Image (cartoon, rainbow over all chains, first blue to last red; front, top):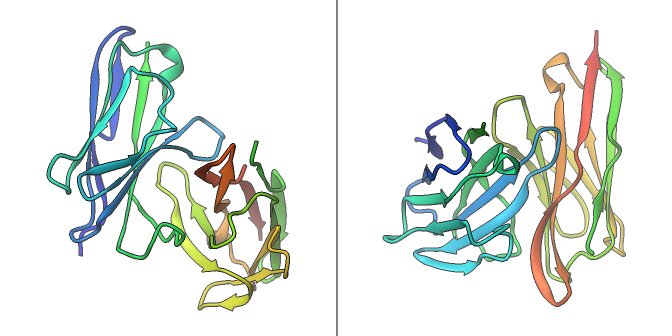
Amino acid sequence: GAGVSQSPRYKVAKRGQDVALRCDPISGHVSLFWYQQALGQGPEFLTYFQNEAQLDKSGLPSDRFFAERPEGSVSTLKIQRTQQEDSAVYLCASSPPGGRTSHEQFFGPGTRLTVL
Amino acid sequence: LAKTTQPISMDSYEGQEVNITCSHNNIATNDYITWYQQFPSQGPRFIIQGYKTKVTNEVASLFIPADRKSSTLSLPRVSLSDTAVYYCLVGAFTSGTYKYIFGTGTRLKVLA
């Protein structure tokens, strides 16, 4: 079956531009996560959805970051007025029902965002 | 702040056993410990998960001591294709808030 897909794979934005990153999770996975991974670093948690409900957005670095999952499947991470420090790989992961304490997450390939 | 610490890098030779340890002092009581492998330009890939003692699957073993403040990923007989970055992932409470925390990552290089 298909895994988690993300689009675009690469995005170059001028500083101040808005961007939207898309994640298609594995069908039937209720949990969806977004992470930010800077070069040479481990992924940093951004936000978590269970179906359409955003249960945790504590990792979003500023109010310029916004995520949604309106129908409980596809999710979009939007970054407004991009800054150079937003340059990173944005990873999406999904997981089947299993409780929050189990971390078997299936990751997409990521979107590499470069802000000039 | 909750912190998850791993060695930055390790070198090994083909056929050897490799052990990578992660320390996670603030792990939440009911939380699992999960390990991931990441190749360049790819998302992390699940390797193994455990709660306590020892877990083994077809690719790795995971050793967790009784206090659960650390865990050790064991890769038997590594090959060149095991060259990658390895991360542990735990959930921990920081200032009363539950957070997912990836380790700092261990860059494993397998030499011929």
